[in-house]
Image (cartoon, rainbow, N blue to C red; front, side):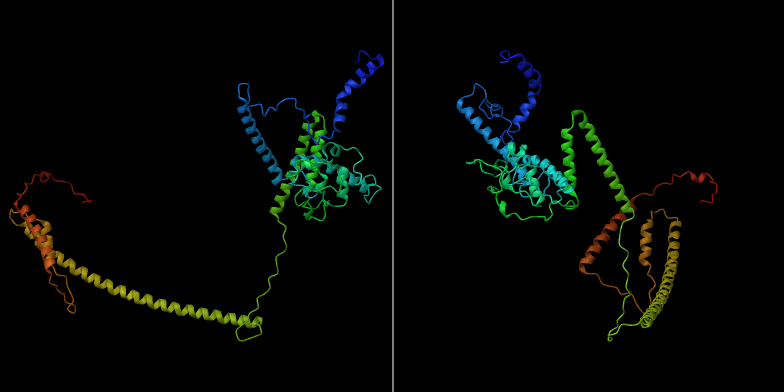
Length: 448
């Protein structure tokens, strides 16, 4: 075709049109009413997800079975993606302005509408600061819709900044019937009539007409302690970052992060200072307590209350004195009883030592005899203890109890065993004395 043209036409096409052809195509395709679909939707080939598990050696029945299973899994994946839009909301979005459509349209749709709302707010600020202080916009008419050929109404069937400015100026949230049913999570599968953005469209959302307003002031920046203001600023920075050339994006992001870090550090230092010296109200004035006594309707005066307190303190002192006297008497009685007890114990110990001395003399006399028979020291101590009778008082004589038949039987066996043991010991010959220490004279030591 180019060869059949003239030289001027060839120069125009090759010099002017061909370098700008991608821009022309982009500008033209942005006006397509394709609802955000980026494919041609023609049957040019099978989808890669369906042909993953297929090959030429499969039977037709097996291929159909695999395709059906794959389609079921795709449906589950699609439901999982939609479930996130049902239970959550995007962070960088004005939840008050979009409260009628949140959790009813997809997150992708809300992310497309978020930057348009920022542009609508900027237009509102310009109108308020300009000559048109009342904010009336005669160019936009909701009966005819947007006449500025915005991309969202033409391509995505979504409200643009002019529609959003119309509702933002009225301080109302945007309704759900301005969004194409394709963006609704539970919307209809097919529309039988052409759809346009109008105020009288059918609201396909469930319960969309019965939603109550959660806030009266939609455009108030102080609502939520300025949270929406931070979100709007972040969205503006994100949009600015997307429109920058590739070499400036990273430096812009680093500068934004540095600025936010400085702001966060300053805020932390401020909180630390407030924590060191907290802001608080002055201490409350403590009112003096009024004293009442039974039988009187009038409260006591200061002197009467002081006298009553003095009397109570005197009573407490008398109680403490009486308790101390009782304790002293008890201590004296205990000391007297302890002295008597110690005297009795000393007397008993003296008598016991005297009796032990007499028994030891007897044992020494037995050991000094010239008899060669073996004598058991334990037996002699037992006999001396049996013969010894501790001194008793005449007022309390010792009572002897006759043993029972069972006790006599047990004692008899014990006596028999003791007699056998003594008989065995008496039969043993006396061991010879083999010590040789008598021949040596050991020096005397104080430790001995």
